[in-house]
Length: 130
Image (cartoon, rainbow, N blue to C red; front, side):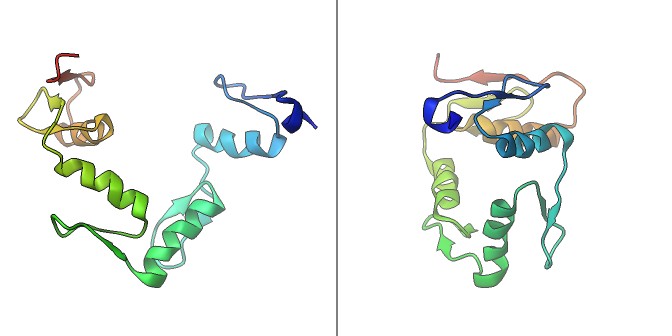
């Protein structure tokens, strides 16, 4: 009933997450615990959700069927290819403070930052002037 009323009585005790279903809260708590009970039979991949594992398994079953028309990148899902293609856009607002790496996605800069293995806190500069 709470789904229909908008009420969210299930609260995470570690963050501000609220939900209308107890099962959703149980799934959410895996974010904090790091629990990944679902594993791929073909590789070392593990997931906290069965639906994510099913998506992953498509890679083994049918291969990477989506191709980038600008490089050799291949993906199992169209949305992954769309995210990848953003890397080819010329307008790259985020720059690494440690090297010349530039990107238009904050998430890619965060991933790149790990290559420096520095004990400095994460920082970036925006080249867009924003």
